[in-house]
Structures are given as C-alpha cells and as structure tokens.
Image 1: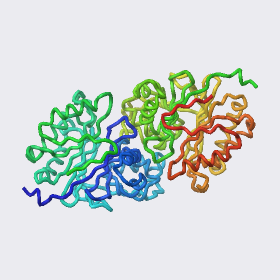
Image 2 (image 1 turned 180 degrees about the horizontal axis):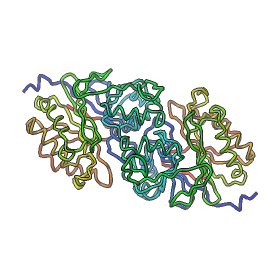
Image 3 (image 1 turned 135 degrees about the horizontal axis):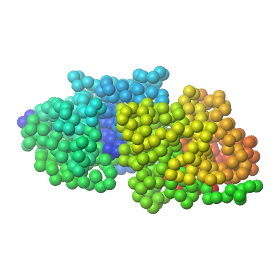
Image 4 (image 1 turned 90 degrees about the vertical axis):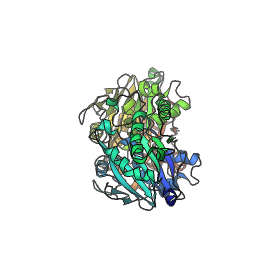
Length: 303
Length: 303
C-alpha cells in the first residue's frame, strides 16, 4: 500500500445548495477547497448567495457573506448549462469580482448564446455578444489536459457525461497535490444512456481508489427506485447509483471502497422522495460506502 | 366622488421574493389575488418555491406549499426576461401543473429562444424548439386590448417600458371588476431613458386614482440617490421614484395621492443600501404616499 506516502489533509466542502429541483433557494452548488485553504472553487452554481447566507448563519464561515462570495470563491466549475446548475452564478455576477468560469466547450457555448447575451443577462463574461464586459473569464476544459484552477492549489480534468441524449454534462476530477475529489454533474447510467462515459471515468479514478488518493465522490440520485428507466431523463436512482459504483468496485477492488466518501447530490425533493432515496441507498450499501447527505450551509470534510 | 359606488374589497398580495439582485432565494415575485379569492396571478417569478416555503412558515397560507404552487398560482405575468425575474418560474415548471404565462411579444421571444429551448431547460412551454411539451401556455399581451387572466377574476393590460435602451420591460395594469393594481417591472425614468413610456402609464391610470379605484402601485427602486444617472442601467433611485409619482400627482391631483399604496420593489441589497433607500424615500414623501416595504412570505392587503 502506497497509502501513507500520499497522506495529506483531504478537502473541505461547503454545500451552498443540494437539491435537484423545485427549491429555488437550494440548488446544486458545492464550494470545495483543500483542507487549510480558503481558496475555493465552486462545483456548479444553482444557488450561491442564499447558500452562503445559510453557511454564515451556521457559522461554517467566520467571515461575512460578501467576503465568501468575492474572495473565497475563486472560480466556478459548471457541469452543464441547465438553469438549476447555473442560475445563482449568473444572478450574483453583477456584484461579484473577476472570476474564472471553467466548463467544457458545449456548456460555454450555451452560456454565451443563452445567458450572458444581454437578453437574459448583461454579458459580464469574456466572449459572446458585444460588449463582453470580461468580468467572468471562460476557461475551456478538455478530457486530455489538466487545467489549473487559478488562484487555488487545485487543478481539474473534465470528462463528458450523457444527460439524456443528445444533452451532455460533465464529471470533474479535481486534484490538489496527490489527493483527488470526483464530482459528477447530472448523468444517466451508461446502460440506459447507451454510452461508456461513466465507465471511462471509473477507469480513470480506479487507480486513485486503490492507492487511497480519491478522498470523495459526488454522485447524483434524482429519483427513488420506483422511477421507471424510460423516465429517468438522464438521471440516476439508488439502484443505478449503486450499480455504477459496483463497476468502480470491480476495477478498484471492493475492499478499497469501504468507507469511501460518497456525497449524494441532486435529490428532487418531491413528496417524501428524499426519505425514500436515503432508505433505498442505505439498504443497498453492501460496499460499505460512507454515504453523505449534504445540508445547505453545513460544512463537510473529505479525507 | 364616485368612490363608494366602486367600493369593493381590494387585493391581497403575497411577496415570494422582493430583492433586485444578489439574494438568489429572494428575487422579484408577487402573488396577487382579489380579496376573498385564492386564484392568484404571480407578477414576475424570480423566486417561487423558496418564497412559498417562507409564506407557509409565516402562516400566510393555511395550505401546504404544493397546493400554493399548483393550485393557487393560476398564471405568471412576466415583465421582462432577465433571469432575476424568471428563474423561479422555470425551475419550478417541471413539477408544476398546466399554467398560462402572460407577457409581451419580445419577452415571449426571449423565453422561447433562451430558456424553454431544451438547452437551458426542457421546453415545457407551448411553442419554440420541438418538442414543445405544452404545460406552460404563452399568452401574448398588448397595450391595445385587455386580456383575461384565465381561472381568475382578473384581467390585464400591458404597457411597454424602457429598461436601459434597447431593452424593454412591462407595466401591468391588473383589474378585478372595478378595482385596479398597477405593477411596474424594472424601468428607468422617462427623463433618463428619453422615452414617454412611464408618462403614458400615468396618463392611463390617472382617472383610476381620481376615482379611488387604483388600490396599489408596485414601483421599483434599485439604488440609493448617490447612484449617478449615467449608471442607472434602466432603474430608479428614490429621487426618480418620487419624480415619476409627482407626474401622476399632477394628472390625478395631489389630494388623491395621499395614502395611495405604493409597494417598493427591487431594492438591490448591497451594503446598507436598503436602509439608505428607505430613509431617502420616507424623507421625500411629501405626497403622503403609503410606502410599503414588502417582506418575503408576509402577506399584504391593498385597499
């Protein structure tokens, strides 16, 4: 085991929004930084300021909300351009400082065409309909190269995902020195989407699981198991969530999966679905994953 | 005075979101219904479900949040397509019931092109990129004809506004029997925008003020007076807010303005701007308007 050779301090996470719909003050957004640092990147940005206010109330931060928004968040990683993953970033852009926005090509194209276009919102970004006010700087990510997250100690590789064909989404593998976190945006299972996108991500991170360097995975579950496969709309259920993680387990070894941090994201809180999903996940957790159900504003540690 | 001949019961308002920026769980949206009715229209829709939850917590409603969203809100009136006025409606559309969306032609065009387009969001609307799932039904408003708000006792006339040229916004004159409410979306002052748009609205409602049939006005103030005119970006300050209402007073008579309900909307809560704006408005209120500073989830009566 080369585990100890890589032992560092892990990551901290502040969830700014955790749900996959309906609650328009609590939508997917997770601040991530290496332990000991206040230089965060924000993974998706459905809700920003409302989540920062919650975190300040929870005393997760000891500084004020303005400092968190303007100074702690150094950039945004956007998995896909659906409004519930991007609305908060756009709405807060007017009063924000200069920042980088990292995404794959298609996602940046949608931001240019449909959001920062002067019709939906002033173009505060670095490209697109003139005048481009150049406060938010588009940084295009690819699968083939690691990109530094500016003003932080982190870097990122992006992997394409399928989110109900032909729509795409992204997984981000974030690195700080020799430690990693893997974040999935919305995604359907390979078997339903008829792709090998998730498999490719699992293959890439399996060596990191084996060596204990993958400190956490963020993976979505939108619906309970009762949702039929033909109505997944590019999402996972507890059954598919565990099936996908079993594929990683085959590659990395089941023993290495025990106590792996897996943050459950994007639950659609319709009726009592949230409780049903938690129950279904816990009952199916034969791998012994450390399942984490995040709460808005309440900090987490991944190590 | 023909006042008593028209005396009815006025309107009730439930603010779902009140701010003009930053707070991505508390953005412009006002449920409006005639007193005694639970058939509401929602004026703009920056924040929807988060505001409904606040109103349920405040006991403004005695039913649950799902009933308010699905049954009480019969339709949306959208003043302009900036994200802070429309994000909540779009995000909640997936789990919503069939509903009408009323707006002027340009605004509907932006919704089709940039929101309900399958890239930013599934097309749950009645037109635009195929397949149009036809849950939200576009209803185009004009200045020349009154449009019935379906499943309610109300009807509406739309007036164009200027929101930093060439961008447009809308004022809605809502009627129930012989009583009226006037709602302004974001707007710059005529003198800065170099238009006569607001003047035309004031001329249309002056007879209603004279006869006591205008039960309330919603008007925006985004910045304190310190904001220079060249940086208004199509908004009002307390000075311009009062200047515009003075124009109405000239047409309707100052005596008729006393105690007119004016709901102050769209304050951008940066620093202590909210307090500054309240102070500046109260000090400049020589007309004796009943200025109302709405709070998310706290019901109001306009009569």
